[in-house]
Length: 319
Image 1 (spheres, rainbow, N blue to C red):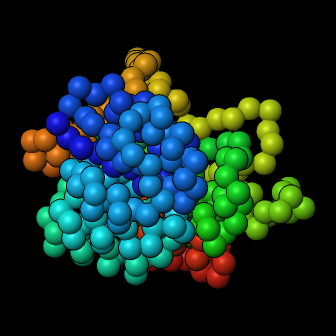
Image 2: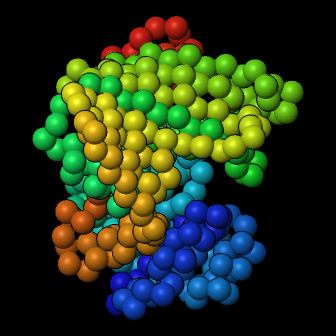
């Protein structure tokens, strides 16, 4: 039996509970939140004990794995503390807001030898995996993405110092999908502005447009916004000689010459992600983790570079 503890009892933690509570090899042993009532409510539905101090939870429950589902600004030293106890981690995205701090965490976790998964759940989506297989032997020339979303109902989300902005906190998923399919990004230039929601208590940009160059020479572009629109939409396009590949939702469409292939998935990628984490702990097979901490760091670095480019008006080069 794999014993799992959770830090943070918000909406994302609830998604993890949906995936893990029915798992026959999982026992939820503890849930920690700064608001005890939130932790207790989640315990009432999923089992375990409620805590407000995570070190007390880790010492008392001695879990095999810890899910860290706290806001970007609130990580503190929880990864280091858990790693020192040999506890495997699933860290929600983004993994932080400061690259120096995140790199130091990575060094501690690597030295501890623990398994570290991250919350880039879309990597487990069947449509993305099929797209990756299709592209494995094909040259990629251009990658384009769009995300039009609503506004998450978290009080910290509209504050730049707490969330990092939409590209860092939310549209990070879409940037990660671009990286998953086309490889590392070496050049970033971006423009951002706060135009529509400037009187609504926001200090994060509500319109963002970023350009990328990938290590293989392909060029990429992403637009994202959260101000009210008639529809919410997200898609990703990859283009190369003789083909156009599109992922929208769980649907993959590939047009090659005169042929069109459509795959409509109905998979639960949250479940796939969490079950892979449990199996990796149980078996020691790290290959089951599709987005480890090093991958999450690279995606974070791209989105933070976009913020820096927009602030300075200069292109940012990544090594």
